Image 1: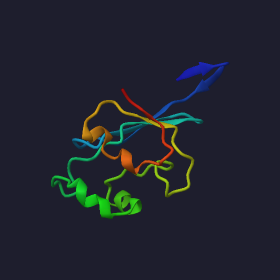
Image 2: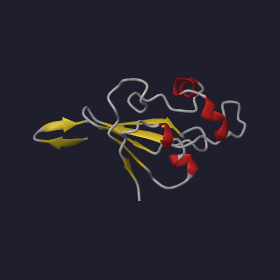
Image 3: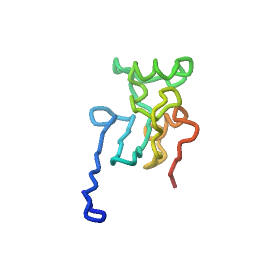
Image 4: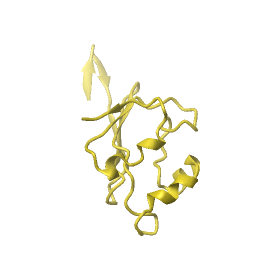
Length: 114
């Protein structure tokens, strides 16, 4: 928590993916007025624990991939939900399990990376 002009700013950290799995890292940092993601990674395994074939995902619409838990359910991340867009995505490093789902993000998403 920080203070700006005697007003507290609360930052929330939401781990959408990556705590109980290898791959698929996605963490959200948010305040009342801003939201950024750190990574939007491709999971390495599907729900049954088998290796995920990313080519097999191309035929599914976004809502189905969210339902199957391939894509994280984050309002404003995709063009399909009409929510306020996230402010950007920060890529921690260039491994597929950290950036592999960038192609599903809204077209106007700002990306920050080295």
